[in-house]
Image (cartoon, rainbow, N blue to C red; front, side):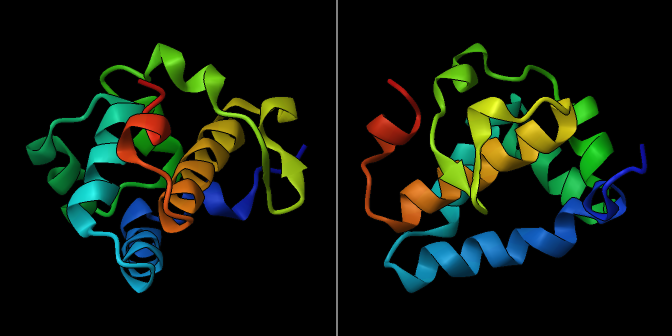
Amino acid sequence: MAKHKIYSMSFASVYPHYVTKAEKKGRTKTEVDEIIRWLTGYSQKELEAQLENQTAFENFFAEAPLLNPSRNMIKGVVCGVRVENIEEPTMREIRYLDKLIDELAKGKTMEKILRA
């Protein structure tokens, strides 16, 4: 099976779109970063290094210090697909992040987004 093109895209090339989506709805880059850190276990410094290094999506998730065990509580539809039904691990992680950013843009509280 061919790998998805997004896997080789750098995380840094998509990151500004996450921030823009959030800011258009009155949310902040700080909140976007908090979501990413919650999901992946990266520190802020490590996250910034991943962005600076133009790390590919596939490696961004593969190298994550600690994928949050509560991420399996993320449910719903992104791009017409139920995230909980995505079998390919990297694509599921990407869609988890997409879903969390969607929730942020829709005005959910950080407590709910971070499954507290």
